[in-house]
Every structure is written in structure tokens, then in C-alpha cells.
Amino acid sequence: MPISPNQGSTGGGTAVTITGTNLSGTTAVKFGSKNATSVTNVNATTVTAVSPSGTGTVGVTVTTPGGTSAPVSYFYVGAPFKSVLSATSGPLAGGNSITITGTGLSTATSVSFGANSATPTVSSDSSLSVTVPAGAAAGSVSVSVTTAGGTNNGFSYTYVDLPTIGTISPNSGSTSGGTAVTVTGTNLDSTESVTVGGTAAPFAVINATTLSVVTPPGTAGAADVVVTNPAGSDTEVGGFTYVEGPGI
Image (cartoon, rainbow, N blue to C red):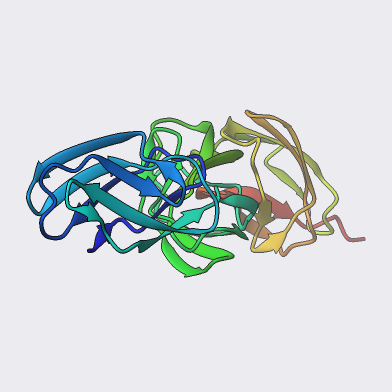
């Protein structure tokens, strides 16, 4: 007498289908010592039922006027507990893979990022990976994992749009570095790095439209300025010009 699915939430509420023979006139379905919360006798070979709450492994039996069947195993699964997201932000377009670790993840069927969901690849009971779906707009969304044991929320993920560089002021300075530069643009509040001429530059985020940057040493001539955030990079080609100091 197969039962499908053969596992569900400890809170109950899982709809299961039981198949077998001589099931007409079913009067009761029990999960261990508890009656199913709903029973429908579909036909002589099929009964549907909704599991009550429970824990561990229990035997499911079907009772008809002819008697009670032998039990088949049903497994109660606790809700998942998420402990770590390997990345908490990424591009608005999605497509990046993240790892979720925790407990009770072995039966995970979906991971939701706000209103959008993706099917995960389960590595073990404590780990799964998922490709982040595209977001509807930049900003934070809740992350939830759904398993046979239920759905657990508790984390957020931030969709980030690509940075853009608008102005660089001043746009020239000494080859010895140390020039304080203001970079304006958009989506700059999640900036991870700034380079000038390929060399990392110290920076501070002022707000979503402004960065304060100190130029590193460089060689005379035009240098590209690159701003990078979790969504990607924007390059201002020749955005800063290094000028050699006077010689006497």
C-alpha cells in the first residue's frame, strides 16, 4: 500500500495519496494513533488524506468495513533552519549562485527571493545551492526555503543595480597620488572597489550617488577609473589624468 508523499511537516496539513486494493468504503485513515484531518475515498484503489500533526516515523493505516490494513511508514519532517547565506547581495539580473547552509534542507524543493523562486540543488541536509532569479527592482527581499517540513524565512537578500559614473572632480592630479577626488553617479552605495589606472584606490561611500576617492600613485597620462559593486562594474575611460610635478 504505497503512500505519496511519504513525508511531511510536523505541523500536519500534508495531502497524501494512498493506493492499494479493496479501499472502497474507507472509514478512517490513521497516522500512528491520530486520525487524518480529512479523508476522501476516491475509488477502490485510491484514498486521499491530510496528515495530522506529529513527529518521527509513524505507521499509516486504512480502515474499511473489511478491517484495517498493515501500516506503511510516514516520516514527519521539521521545518528547515537556515543559518548562513554565502552572499547577501548580487546583481538585479540574477544568475549568480549562492549556498545556503543550515539544517533540515535535504527535502528542499524551492527557494524564494521575494516573489520569485528557484529550484535548488541539494548537497546534504545542511547545504544547498541555488541560482538567484532576476529581481523585480533593486532593494532587499526576503529569502525563504521550502521543504517537506514547511517553509522557513528569516534572511534577506539585496538586489543591486549596476553602478554608473557621472562626474569625476577633480579629474587630474599628481603622479605621486594622494589627490582627493569626488565621484558622482548612481548605485554607488554598494561599491566594493575603485581602481584608478588598474590600481586599487582608497574610497568612502558618501551616499548612493557619491564616493570620496583618494588616487593611488600612477604614471603620467590618462587613466581609467573603474567602480565595482556586486552587480558589476562601470568604467570611465581616461577619467583621471596623472600629471608629473615640475622639475628644476
